[in-house]
Length: 87
Image (cartoon, rainbow, N blue to C red; front, side):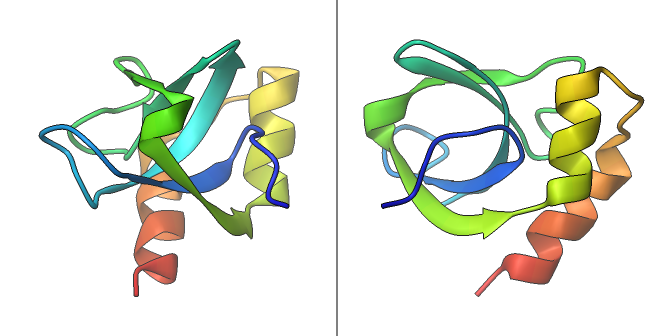
């Protein structure tokens, strides 16, 4: 089973952003903060209910460590990771 954790890749299943890919920035109970590096950069993440997301079994460990430790992460890293895993 795929676990909801920081730097995980997810696909939106509902809303105006249906079928868009995002990276999980943080988890707050039933909601997660998401970023795609462009329309929703790190300083303005999208908040979405977990039940409206499809978890994809892809993680960026380096990005995850940076998010957990509070290190500087830039939007270009997120865009690069999403672009590399688009199908």
